[in-house]
Length: 252
Image (cartoon, rainbow, N blue to C red; front, side):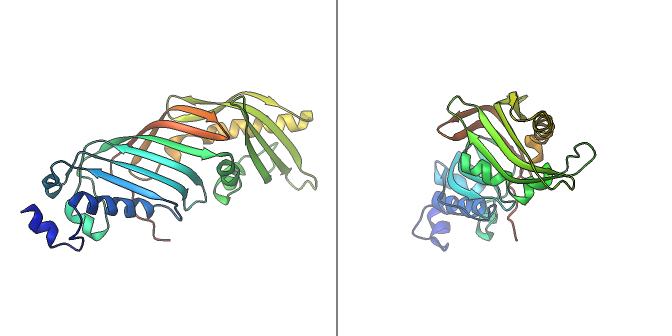
């Protein structure tokens, strides 16, 4: 029966697991504006389980992933537990879960990724929601530097209100994960003039308020981070993704 069904499909020279693997890879790729190499490997033994939508799990590895909001991810690994899917939806290019599942994850962001992200309209707009001394802020040339002592440095030129000259902030901090849901800058030191230090503190307080993972998760998912490590000009996050439904394909 299995060979008859798969033999009549467009992927007749492939096994059922390969068919689903390609569909999952394509569905994940559609969530991003641009990607590098993406590989999803579905595990199902015996393969006949796929006809009922049962999967032992799947592993996903991707790199060079640019999100539609401009944020970039150097690499992502997802290791999904056993899950039930709607097998018929695979052939319409969709992945539909019959029940929630979860995956362990590893996400890598480079120093360049962080600098690029802090200069995207998506992040700049959120930063500029902060009112400082009753005036608006205008960010430019924001830079993130990952240091050998596992600290990070945030530098930016910021115009306050209608001021002609920007204030240069230079902040060094360490990264901590609080309650698995918030990424926080801690043990912060501020450089520069008293004015620059005061503005830097306001910026860090604002950024810490923004860094709630639930504000950035894709629809139908919930992220929980257990650990963050800075090494070799990269930040590596380790955690869990709770997946209630597979995120929908972007159309723009």
